[in-house]
Length: 361
Ligand SMILES: Nc1ncnc2c1ncn2[C@@H]1O[C@H](COP(=O)(O)OP(=O)(O)OP(=O)(O)O)[C@@H](O)[C@H]1O
Ligand SMILES: [Mg+2]
Image (cartoon, rainbow, N blue to C red; front, side):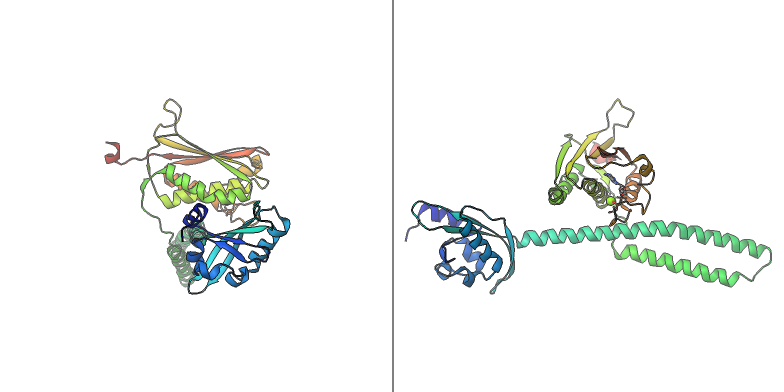
């Protein structure tokens, strides 16, 4: 039997399309339903919706549009267990159809398989969390490890001084403290190793790509907070030698801080350009400016923001900016900030473009 043009069009669509009558019975469906629901078109047509997809939210959605007559519903996410097909996550949208040749209302349902997309987002969230844990572990190792080393060397100095005076009484207690310090150092090292936060190698990094990807990654969160993103990257920024994981984390921290500073929404603007040749800066540096239109930072707070564990955010660790500064400095760069309370803040990250000899040729 030959098909009408509209049926052919419906069949090539990547989504499943169902048309329901007022009794929620399927009057029409496309081929996409077969691959999504693992049922043939013959098995689906004429059946009640609940017999094909037993999900209350979808039925409510269909009834909702049929009763309101003109509304298109907001998409709902359905978690479905499909016979032999495992579980799937679908995005469903329902719309009422009005045609002159059909007296009663019809409901059009479009089902989109978003299982892979959701899994990918979860994986990204997971790696984000792991990166956060790694950052925390490295910061703790740094913040606790340094004073521990100072305690150990001071203790050694005291012990030597005591030995010089012929006093041997404290030898054993000092040794006990030393052993415990050593144990704590080992624990801190294994914590860093466990979270995979060992420092990686410098590699050639395309900042343009890294920043664009990060901005795409945070775009959903920005949208959720009513924050619009603007990017202005100069053309021809050469790739620089950097530890890409750390650089990504650095910018992600700054983007997150910017979004957190705009609870009522606002504008996040990211600009990237080379340092001007005739300016005070080195032309072999790249500058990334991250500006927000958020609450700003007072002069009093400004002196603390780069300190570890300083945070005005009840859920924050206060490690973000101290990490950013350390990473920028370890890369031979720096990070500076300008802010006006009530107007917004701009963080400027400067990184040297260390090109390999063969890249320069
Ligand atoms: N763009 C910004 N606008 C206004 N204040 C900011 C901005 N960025 C940072 N701050 C201030 O600096 C403080 C320290 O920032 P930092 O990133 O180190 O920690 P946090 O964001 O509070 O916690 P975490 O990074 O662990 O989530 C913040 O709590 C906030 O008060
Ligand atoms: Mg932060």
